[in-house]
Image (cartoon, rainbow, N blue to C red; front, side, top):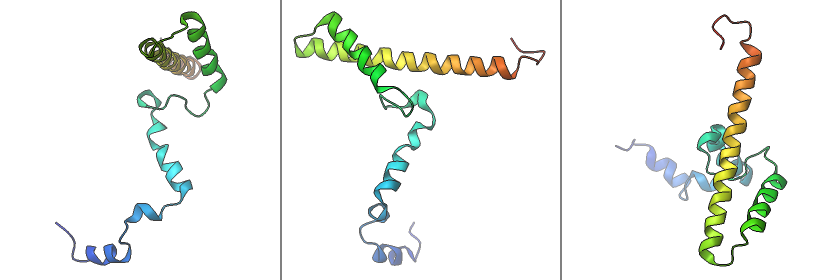
Length: 110
């Protein structure tokens, strides 16, 4: 159900509030999904090394030298999967290191 004053706000801004946002605001809000990187759909996240990804990609292309669209697609998918696995492994290791450093004195630490 609409509020009686909704039409006033709509009349004042007929194109919608999203059109009033600056590019900086749009860029910042597009990063909201990156708070939990385990579910991120971004291939390269802030802080990740694009050169490391390029080297991984080059290694796969050098090894398999795909020459057809299907094999290029499959190699790209394997590269993506390996990159995401490497990311999750790094995150896991960071968490384990944090736990080891912060809970070492705790009697229930394992």
